[in-house]
Length: 424
Ligand code: GDP
Ligand code: IMO
Ligand code: MG
Image: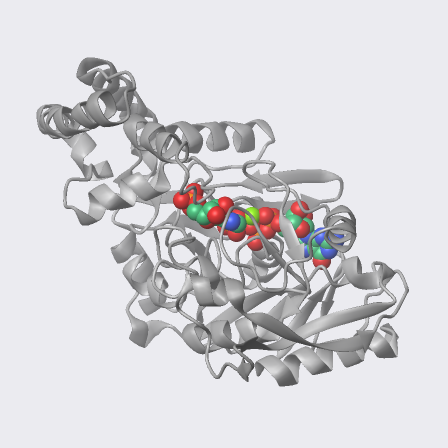
């Protein structure tokens, strides 16, 4: 019985989608536990590329059942669009996808408020998917859940009370147009009919499955440094992508989690604003972006790029309790003569002992680098560890010892077969 939590160790886009697709052959269920359609998980099968936002990446394999847990915030528009794309591509979704009745719904005003908030000077650089405003309502105990769709009258009453407040905000604070209760009620009741076959008590489903010996892969979205508690606050998302969030977001208790698998990109990227100590601006950053095709899978925005930050990953390993790892995009570093790795931060002439909580300190922190020799070789066709150039092995060994990780999967390209598995 395995219940594995898979987490991004950096600022998201580490290649979680590809690795879930590889690992899930050995799992009965793949479940998302937080975030929403802000995620963009890419899987490349032969020459077809799929980008999943809400549905677990396990859907592309025939075997596993897929669950969207209670911790996920669900935009029915995005969900139905994704189901439609998959069904049209011949991928069976009905009967394989189960959505928690406890999950909160993203409403049209959440998306509008998210984009209006981004007009100001204190931009987070969100994906505009309504994530923050929806989680605000959840924690303010005003949110509308999937289960609320069951009763038209109570749904409408909840919506009316929410809209009274939102419309006041929209009109008087944002100077934007107001929203209509009837229109949204009608729209969401239509959604209800369409999503009804997928809704279930997923906490029970997951726990009963684990009790009967089934294995579960919990697919985190975003990454540890975007975590609302442990990330570079306020430049974070509004959920808990770290492994702790997997329990509250799925209903699987901590006593049933068996291991935590981290996804590490061979360098660092970030989309949106916020501190990024190893960021490369100028030509080197542009090169990394070009070689790594670093453009957002959800918004298409160019990703900020920089060297691997071992100090940050070490912190991530600690707060997630990571046991094993996959390293992705190692092929992208093949063109560099030299590669740098950050091993710590200096601030005011002193080496920091722990990862700073204050974004201003992080902004001022000066990375301390070691320089390693590049391998100057295309490794994307290599399938055995032994065939990797000695400099690549040195790079991997250094990251393992510096971050305290064990690398079990080495990804050398976006496709399924561009993967090197390390024996136990
Ligand atoms: P996720 O959000 O963590 O699932 O990652 P994204 O899908 O947003 O971004 C990862 C990108 O890198 C996608 O375009 C993947 O197809 C691609 N990718 C994944 N692994 C590799 C790899 O090992 N090498 C290369 N070159 N691309 C990869
Ligand atoms: P995956 O799962 C990278 C970032 C946004 C922004 C911040 C807050 O594909 O790794 P939000 O819309 O969540 O309120 O935005 O978080 N962000 C991501 N960055 N990958 C993601 O998901 C992200 N989801 C959100 O760019 O900086
Ligand atoms: Mg992504």
